[in-house]
Length: 290
Image (cartoon, rainbow, N blue to C red; front, side, top):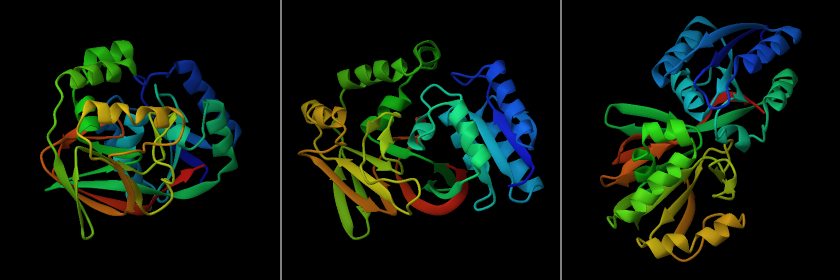
């Protein structure tokens, strides 16, 4: 591991504090590292910061102390195959950290000190000239609609509760429209689909057993039942830690998927755009400290 590292942090992240950041920097110095601090406050600035680091350094170590949105933005600015990434849970939900079993900033620092890394697979979203990268999952249909309709003021006030409020609004104005996904020679009619690169949803719920950040394929979860009742019937298994399953649920592995039909798409908890879209797995995109 290089002695130099870049620490990217977002002071607007849900559990950020100057005291916590100071503790991180002091720890890194005690480990013999020379941290360079970069503060970002938007996805654009986070991606630009990562681009600059990759442009000016060979095989950089980038430590992100922030939430999932900032981590996602940093990854979107990385040069594939060039960097080692470490994450510190300074966000509200910290879904990626939970997927990596990093439950506290102290545990994250211990892992940075140990320096063990693995090659991370990411997902690529391609719509015309638009290309974006996601880490955990992409949801099209109901999931995308809920995230799209989250109100900024509610998110600032209620944090994760804003998604519940949005879900209640979406349930009230239920959309029964369907769309088609293409995987290899298969054509599947869906009401919603979630492309899972990680196994968990929202940080705690086991959603797609068998999905892994380190394998070069996704776990595709299709909801074919278009009724409210059909969705509600999946909740007991999900809450019991069995994943999303039951009648009307189709799951299968795939490394590439085409989504046809105009439906909202969210990735890593943020609305991106409306489908259609092509989704591909990109293995060995970045090394990540585990």
